[in-house]
Length: 440
Image (cartoon, rainbow, N blue to C red; front, side, top):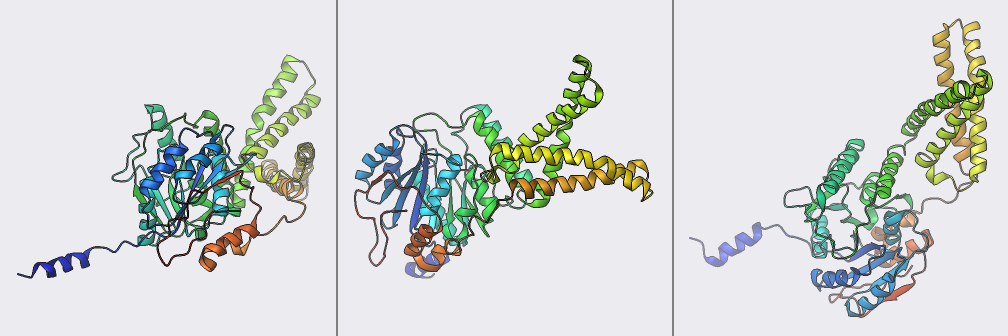
């Protein structure tokens, strides 16, 4: 029988080597979470080992005293804590996370909510698992073995969460194939794997945005128990649900072919208000058919304009006034109607096509022209407003923490923090450098 020491050596050699977590930036978006942030910082302090250099960046959209509470609570923290307060909450919670990614100075960024439904003591495991699996994204999941959604209060919220998960995975089967919980707001991502300028969040499902647009090369998951909210009220509302649906449409129609298909479906939906208006004007008001048809067509045009504004071109509206966009769209849509009839006549007279085939051909041609004209003449910016910064893409990989700060500083303006609270030097092991407070 082998000696005890030799047996212990063999057992130790058989165990997997778990790398130490790298330097971590924890990004916490907040909106009126003054009752939670103090306890959150206390639990982060208790849950993140002293040997792990850590910093916390709060990106705050609050209308209460949350920034002041963070500043006071940070006095008892042994690591850097900073606050970026946004006067305009562009993009909602997801937009706040993007601002945090811009200023993150670490190799790993962990995103978590402030309400303590995400356990802070899981932060080191998320990052260590990413290092061990060589992943670019590590998701804390409620739906893998060992996970639980216990903190989802009530059957209604559970049903909504599951329905949203199925819908997202159904729309993006390949990009979300390795993610069992795309609705999770608790995840770790390598800073070099995501370019903040490419993200266009809408609402609070930022993981969905990151997974679909950034396309991390390798994804891993860690189970976690979704806990009860510590204080305050849930920000999940019917309005946020509608924003989530809009977000799904935007992501699904990001590619030109998908956007053109959605443009066609929106055009088909315009027949409903058109026919309703036509019936009201001819039957109820007794208007002559010809002027009624012209007027009714404008209701369909207006309906289509509103939908493409909300669902297809939300990020490309800033360079023209809404009245300018509506006027241009109305001219293009009505030109389509005027062009369709003579084009059909040309196909019948000169090409010898049957009436139905000629009509279909004219519809297809005018549809393509209407889509191209809408995109080029209304929603295409008058000039390029900047290019993607190569420095931002490889900030961490190319130059370490200081490189990341410099790249972020030159890639995009970041709002000035209204409060920065630091109680002590960061917890850095001997021989390790750390830049300290995150400053934009």
